[in-house]
Length: 380
Image (tube, rainbow, N blue to C red; front, side, top):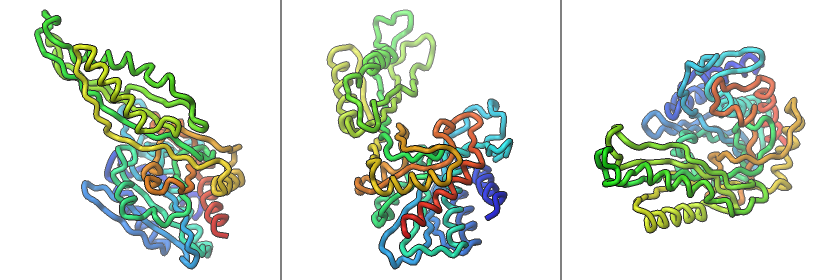
């Protein structure tokens, strides 16, 4: 493909509205693109306009399988009026491509798709299989990665590249992600007599005070550092002159190998039990999402292969890194904990979910080259 064609693919993807849904439109676009270049791709729609797509090239005479994966959904655009560029315009300005998903992660997805197409059109036929797995709902609980894992789509992989934004750095480990909800149950009364009721919001405040230091004694993970945690949503009260009898909060925690999801859940459970026994407040805990950390040691052969490919193709200096974000790899490695995984993509993780999200064209083009290099080095 010419550079303008490569850029056009990413622009097209950004212009498809796939905010927390409608991934079927992305999958159908990619299927047509693959078909136009002689590659079969299967779209697996599973209702509510959601879909996965699987495409592959290779002779299959070598049993090894290299996987690439990317998600088709994006997060929402809560304040579009604050954007200087149309969130769904795919505008190109001064070497940057703007739009929701430009970084996270339609750039990485487009680069993976183009890598397969260009390898095939260059006459490269790996002896093994190069498989692309595109998913839905990565931003909202991985409703697509889980069925793929259960269907065995990951079972034959020997290594996996996740195309999330890394600025060319090769990420060999990332934290897990655990989201929970605390429900505070109180007693509603008129606000002129608050002492006769139990304020559900006050119950949440009591939890928040304790949660602030809940993981202070946990040691640092060798690769992932501290357990990161924060309260992200608070809901409570319906009327200013009524003591609320119900309130909720949501929190998110990033478990590590040193302090895993089960240990995090136990600590939350113990805190809720303590509050319920020692105060007038009654709290209920529900873990709504739980993904484990993913770690491939930095001296692993595949990690080093990916690092060398990135170093040869990105315009900036690249190195081995870790991140506290989570990816679909947490699901894909549930029954394959030893599967070598790297995260490698276009411009910085810090651009993900931001106002005026963007990626640079040089980084995008470098990702395409790096993915092709990884495939060639893996099989040759």
